Image 1: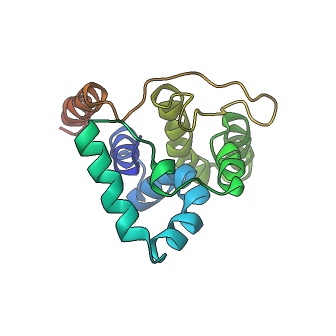
Image 2: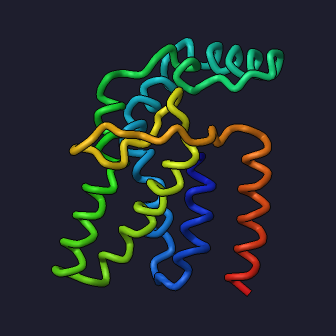
Image 3: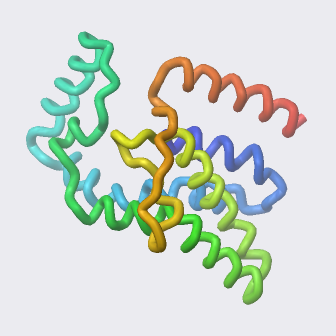
Length: 169
Protein backbone atom coordinates (compact mmCIF):
# COMPACT_ATOMS: atom_id res chain seq x y z
CA UNK A 1 0.00 0.00 0.00
CA UNK A 2 1.19 3.55 -0.59
CA UNK A 3 2.46 5.83 2.16
CA UNK A 4 -0.42 8.30 1.80
CA UNK A 5 -2.94 5.57 2.55
CA UNK A 6 -0.86 4.32 5.49
CA UNK A 7 -0.76 7.88 6.84
CA UNK A 8 -4.51 8.42 6.44
CA UNK A 9 -5.42 5.15 8.19
CA UNK A 10 -3.05 5.99 11.05
CA UNK A 11 -4.41 9.53 11.40
CA UNK A 12 -7.98 8.22 11.53
CA UNK A 13 -7.35 5.33 13.92
CA UNK A 14 -4.93 7.16 16.22
CA UNK A 15 -6.60 10.57 16.22
CA UNK A 16 -6.34 10.83 20.01
CA UNK A 17 -2.56 10.96 19.93
CA UNK A 18 -1.51 14.60 20.31
CA UNK A 19 1.46 14.69 17.97
CA UNK A 20 -0.15 13.97 14.59
CA UNK A 21 3.18 14.37 12.76
CA UNK A 22 4.65 11.49 14.80
CA UNK A 23 1.64 9.37 13.87
CA UNK A 24 2.34 10.08 10.18
CA UNK A 25 6.09 9.56 10.59
CA UNK A 26 5.73 6.18 12.30
CA UNK A 27 3.08 5.08 9.81
CA UNK A 28 5.49 5.57 6.87
CA UNK A 29 8.81 4.59 8.48
CA UNK A 30 8.52 0.87 7.62
CA UNK A 31 8.60 1.78 3.92
CA UNK A 32 10.72 4.91 4.13
CA UNK A 33 13.70 3.36 5.91
CA UNK A 34 14.44 0.60 3.37
CA UNK A 35 13.83 2.72 0.28
CA UNK A 36 14.79 6.34 0.96
CA UNK A 37 18.51 6.05 0.19
CA UNK A 38 17.89 3.97 -2.93
CA UNK A 39 15.14 6.25 -4.28
CA UNK A 40 17.25 9.32 -3.58
CA UNK A 41 20.04 7.82 -5.71
CA UNK A 42 17.64 6.86 -8.51
CA UNK A 43 16.00 10.28 -8.64
CA UNK A 44 19.34 11.89 -9.33
CA UNK A 45 20.41 9.29 -11.87
CA UNK A 46 20.63 10.60 -15.43
CA UNK A 47 18.25 7.94 -16.84
CA UNK A 48 15.55 8.39 -14.22
CA UNK A 49 13.18 10.54 -16.28
CA UNK A 50 13.39 8.15 -19.23
CA UNK A 51 12.80 5.10 -17.00
CA UNK A 52 9.88 6.83 -15.29
CA UNK A 53 8.30 7.77 -18.64
CA UNK A 54 8.73 4.24 -20.04
CA UNK A 55 7.33 2.68 -16.88
CA UNK A 56 4.07 4.64 -17.04
CA UNK A 57 3.84 4.18 -20.79
CA UNK A 58 4.06 0.40 -20.30
CA UNK A 59 1.51 0.45 -17.49
CA UNK A 60 -0.89 2.58 -19.55
CA UNK A 61 -0.55 0.68 -22.84
CA UNK A 62 -0.63 -2.83 -21.43
CA UNK A 63 -2.91 -2.01 -18.51
CA UNK A 64 -0.35 -4.04 -16.62
CA UNK A 65 0.34 -4.00 -12.92
CA UNK A 66 4.10 -3.61 -13.08
CA UNK A 67 6.17 -3.44 -9.92
CA UNK A 68 8.28 -0.47 -8.95
CA UNK A 69 11.30 -2.79 -8.97
CA UNK A 70 11.01 -2.91 -12.76
CA UNK A 71 10.96 0.87 -12.91
CA UNK A 72 14.34 1.02 -11.26
CA UNK A 73 15.78 -2.06 -12.93
CA UNK A 74 15.98 -4.02 -9.68
CA UNK A 75 16.72 -3.00 -6.13
CA UNK A 76 19.91 -3.41 -4.12
CA UNK A 77 20.08 -6.33 -1.67
CA UNK A 78 20.16 -4.06 1.37
CA UNK A 79 16.61 -2.89 0.63
CA UNK A 80 15.12 -6.33 1.29
CA UNK A 81 17.22 -6.80 4.43
CA UNK A 82 16.08 -3.48 5.91
CA UNK A 83 12.52 -4.19 4.74
CA UNK A 84 12.55 -7.47 6.72
CA UNK A 85 13.51 -5.61 9.90
CA UNK A 86 11.01 -2.77 9.45
CA UNK A 87 8.11 -5.12 8.64
CA UNK A 88 8.56 -7.52 11.55
CA UNK A 89 5.79 -7.63 14.15
CA UNK A 90 8.24 -9.43 16.44
CA UNK A 91 10.76 -6.58 16.40
CA UNK A 92 8.22 -3.76 16.36
CA UNK A 93 6.20 -5.42 19.10
CA UNK A 94 9.37 -5.72 21.19
CA UNK A 95 10.06 -2.02 20.73
CA UNK A 96 6.49 -1.24 21.81
CA UNK A 97 6.78 -3.39 24.96
CA UNK A 98 10.16 -1.92 25.93
CA UNK A 99 8.88 1.65 25.46
CA UNK A 100 5.66 0.78 27.30
CA UNK A 101 7.64 -0.07 30.43
CA UNK A 102 10.27 2.66 30.08
CA UNK A 103 8.21 5.62 28.87
CA UNK A 104 4.58 4.74 28.25
CA UNK A 105 3.52 7.91 26.32
CA UNK A 106 6.14 7.24 23.63
CA UNK A 107 5.00 3.63 23.18
CA UNK A 108 1.64 4.68 21.70
CA UNK A 109 3.42 6.23 18.70
CA UNK A 110 4.76 2.79 17.73
CA UNK A 111 1.17 1.61 17.12
CA UNK A 112 0.93 3.31 13.67
CA UNK A 113 4.04 1.32 12.70
CA UNK A 114 2.33 -1.90 13.83
CA UNK A 115 -0.81 -0.88 11.91
CA UNK A 116 1.35 -0.39 8.80
CA UNK A 117 2.64 -3.96 9.10
CA UNK A 118 -0.85 -5.38 9.66
CA UNK A 119 -2.15 -3.58 6.56
CA UNK A 120 0.81 -4.75 4.48
CA UNK A 121 0.30 -8.40 5.46
CA UNK A 122 -2.98 -8.43 3.56
CA UNK A 123 -2.11 -5.92 0.82
CA UNK A 124 1.17 -7.33 -0.51
CA UNK A 125 1.41 -10.45 -2.60
CA UNK A 126 4.37 -12.77 -2.96
CA UNK A 127 5.43 -11.17 -6.25
CA UNK A 128 6.20 -7.82 -4.64
CA UNK A 129 7.40 -7.44 -1.08
CA UNK A 130 5.30 -9.95 0.82
CA UNK A 131 5.46 -8.96 4.48
CA UNK A 132 7.85 -11.05 6.65
CA UNK A 133 5.93 -10.26 9.83
CA UNK A 134 7.53 -13.09 11.86
CA UNK A 135 11.11 -12.08 11.00
CA UNK A 136 13.74 -12.98 12.36
CA UNK A 137 12.19 -16.25 13.56
CA UNK A 138 10.50 -17.17 10.29
CA UNK A 139 10.43 -16.09 6.67
CA UNK A 140 6.74 -17.00 6.45
CA UNK A 141 4.61 -14.56 4.47
CA UNK A 142 1.00 -14.43 3.37
CA UNK A 143 0.13 -14.07 -0.27
CA UNK A 144 -2.14 -11.06 0.10
CA UNK A 145 -4.01 -8.98 -2.44
CA UNK A 146 -1.88 -6.59 -4.44
CA UNK A 147 -2.91 -3.12 -3.29
CA UNK A 148 -2.45 -1.61 -6.76
CA UNK A 149 -5.49 -3.44 -8.12
CA UNK A 150 -8.21 -0.92 -8.97
CA UNK A 151 -11.01 -2.72 -7.13
CA UNK A 152 -8.85 -2.93 -4.00
CA UNK A 153 -8.04 0.79 -4.17
CA UNK A 154 -11.73 1.68 -4.58
CA UNK A 155 -12.68 -0.37 -1.51
CA UNK A 156 -9.74 1.06 0.44
CA UNK A 157 -10.51 4.72 -0.31
CA UNK A 158 -14.26 4.32 0.20
CA UNK A 159 -13.49 2.66 3.55
CA UNK A 160 -11.16 5.52 4.46
CA UNK A 161 -13.88 8.06 3.69
CA UNK A 162 -16.65 6.21 5.54
CA UNK A 163 -14.61 5.21 8.60
CA UNK A 164 -12.88 8.58 8.67
CA UNK A 165 -16.22 10.36 8.63
CA UNK A 166 -17.67 8.11 11.33
CA UNK A 167 -14.65 8.41 13.61
CA UNK A 168 -13.85 12.08 13.13
CA UNK A 169 -17.37 13.49 13.35
